[in-house]
Length: 87
Image 1 (cartoon, rainbow, N blue to C red):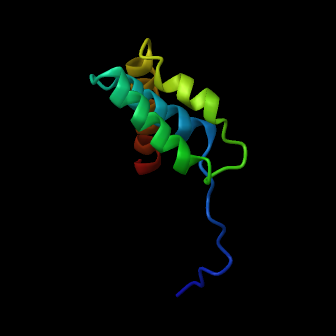
Image 2: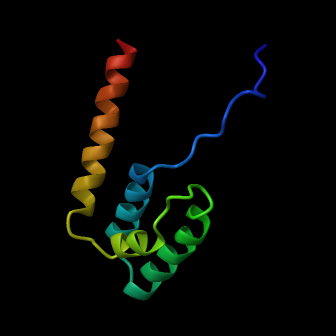
């Protein structure tokens, strides 16, 4: 069995942050609740990557325009990649 001591924990990237922000933006809930959710996520995501930009993330959680399209594009790209790997 391989040792896991040498593995480095992967950091979340801008793409991960954007996907989370898009999901929050696409929720059909009140603006106040959406703001609270975005701030709570920002609090914990800041610890995952020193380059995390809290203000940019919070702003992105308010941008519902195009959020669903960005989500579907990202999921679609990942799905195509998975299909290629399984062939």
